[in-house]
Image 1 (tube, each protein chain N blue to C red):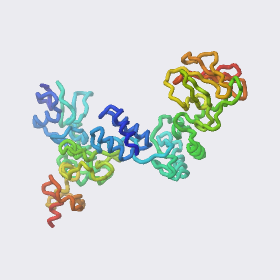
Image 2: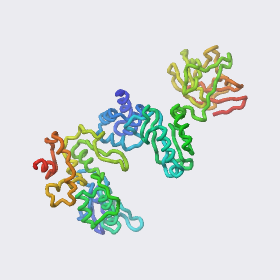
Image 3: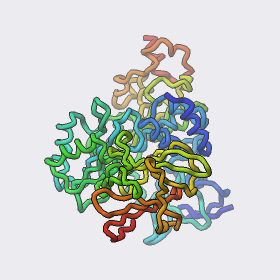
Image 4: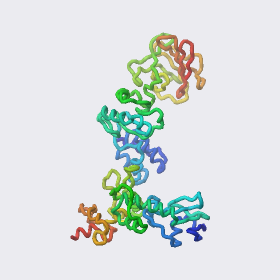
Length: 284
Length: 225
């Protein structure tokens, strides 16, 4: 266990008052609350371990047992129950071979039941990571489990259904900008050169439209306008129209298989981007 | 000073006094279970309910946690209060029938039976032991764990706590497992259930140096036999 990491979490919080937020951060880091971490929190915040343990066991959001990489919760609220949530839970138990509250032996999926998710009209509801499934049937359980294992519904909007992958190429030399070696969220990343104040590096952007994950080789401060260029012909990708959100220059890339152009804002931290397909702007 | 009326009798009390203290000062008996002098009021057992206010605005509050207010009208034994109190005793009896404290309370309030599903817990979650441990013994070895029907009192991770000095304060103050203390005088015991409980200090030799507040101590009496 990373003692230093826990200590830094505790010290960055404001002393005695922030026990829940400390525990939340630890849980985010380790997926659960290790015993040693609770002891450390008690010692550092000068509270008794019994207090910390009481808080950790009181809230359902905290777990003292290691949890899986993915979390699937089935709603057992009144409305979902009436609409047959019990059979859904039975189906999950059957297929995952675990009871509610347990984690599969391969540490992939933690299966839980919850009492209400507040979407009673859509029941039975199942939540996989951050994706909500409405009107779930026992037949649909297999797909949910498979999708969850594949990480389709993970946090960061990984593979959200409304996201689609784009293949882009340089508008000048027409060579593909897709990096087949580096995958971001199960899709090849877009690779471009980035330069700023004489520093040069490479930037990989998720090819999922509407998704802002990126890998930078260098630290670029937020709110900086950078130059993006093609890694093959070094042509600057900067294009005419400014960003719809902040007005900064945008970089354009040609979308493969059509006349579409994707524009992304060159200001770091800005999520402005738009897609021009056959001249029809679909701003987002 | 704050002036309030309790059962029609005017009383002047210091600011910060609770309704319970004011009523007891005037001599009105209010039964309590989770309230002990020297420990912070907790309001868990609700036995000390009193009615405050008048007319349709009247409501029941726990007097041990309710501070005296200027002009407050308190009734400590109205029909509504007694009904609520008897109900609470019935519920307590339903979970902890073997507790001498609760049995005494029941007989004092003329509760002869309870209508709920009988359970045999040995804890009513009044939190007296937790407060005793933390506030009087300065240890904080035990605490509440879990929530709802899974709530229990114990040490973290169910392990012997480093803070625990085996003072026995928690056992001494407990109203639910106090029945053990009548073991030495079986004829005075009500249910004899205590004889079936084994105090932890009996089983382990390391408890010989235990500072015990229980008098007479069941464990010591059994050891003598």
